[in-house]
Length: 185
Image: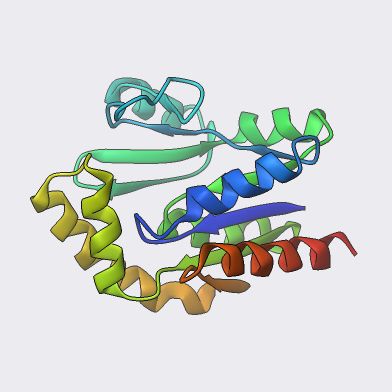
């Protein structure tokens, strides 16, 4: 099974994915996406993302190396490499995706029943704002862009197989664990 995790920025999707990776280190592996954005904070090439130039991204598009790709913000591209899915499946693990909402919808459309799509939803836009400000790594202008985008993305949750409301982290983990257990049976 392939699990696709999507959410507005700051909703906790990476926290949910890290929970699964920590609790089931031999079952799951995260697919690392490519991006044209620069690393933030302590991010490392090949761990959080493959940080590549716009020219390399374009070349990979021309070579048909992506399952899907999107321009998420003006001038910032993200994409899922076919080779990542193949690498993880060859290792006998289930693939986890931590990607943007548009990419997740496209990936689910492409992968169909091979994948379960999960939307992590913040309890409110106000709480989402608090989380984004609390990160301390995003400019006020970018926070406003992300909040505007989050409002639109939350309308797309209807396209996902499952929705987890991340209002209480332990409760959200329980919901997620139930989804995974259901998928294993």
